[in-house]
Amino acid sequence: MHRSKKNRAPVKFSAQKVAIRCRSRLKQIRATGKDRTKMQNILKIFVVFWAALSLTACAPSLHPFFVDEDIVFNESLLGVWISDSGEKCKFTRSGDKHYELLYVDDAPARFETRLIELGGATFLDLYPKPLGNDINLYPANLVPAHTLARVKIGEDSISIAMMDGDWLKQLSDRNQLNLAHERLDDGMIALTAPTRELRAFALKHAESKEAFGEAEVFHRLRSDE
Image (cartoon, rainbow, N blue to C red; front, side):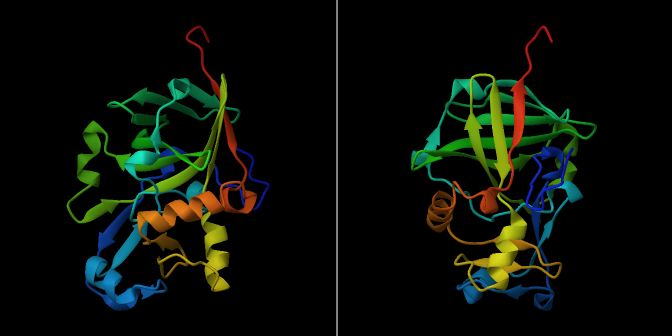
């Protein structure tokens, strides 16, 4: 996979096993959001696990980026897709208007996925879901986090760009990130803002290449290929 551009956020879903773990030592984190006391009472301490280097540029969120009214379903997203770099993923229907996303790799990963529409822009809200043999990776003190991707769906291709965590860090450094968040010891930004603020933020920056980086393009894999 080519990574020549600084703000690229590759769509390597197997690396997106993001979780939030409660811990007892408050000094390991410093709150930078507006509702510090409220967040401390709810979360105490949380540490976001980032499973692979290829997605260090992405940003986890405690809350979803959508409400039920935002959810849409597009049949064109269903099927198996492969990127130019050889990454393969599969979207299947899960319930009435939901998807299950399976990323096929040496270490497969599965996600509950919502296709959401905000002001005409389409996004994917990804929420990790354990595979059958991976239930022990999600004990009671781990809370999976949401991640957001900008998605554009064509007849035989889709493009996916993850929200860029490095961009969020830069906004935070300049005190320009007007969302409740926590900054971890390693500098990672974990969003703790409520859904209504996350929706407005995503819509505001939907067309920003800084916010979502360069998209990864996937092509439909036909059954005869």
